[in-house]
Amino acid sequence: DEVLLETGHDQKGTLMSILSATTKLGYAFSVLTLSALALLGFDNKAAHNTPEALFWVEAFFIGLPVIFLLLGAWAMTSYDLTPERYASIQSALKAKGLSRDPGSPRPH
Image: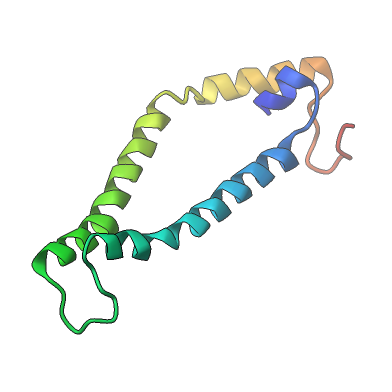
């Protein structure tokens, strides 16, 4: 809604496709995990690995997700959408004639 207010164009489809693309990129990059672990001494075909290799497995599958979740939480602290701000965006959209009721056709 904020993008609609700023640009006058409904960009929800574009924003959703960006989200979808970044998710797919994340899945594609995850394939590199085993290659990176192999460089650090982990052998996924071995019955036993060294403690150092297992440390890196733990770091990749426990440490990295925690780090990225904390980075995401930190990024969200600067996201300033409050109920009051949302209400002001909705009223500004209504004032510009860009607001729509759920049953009405989409603006072009």
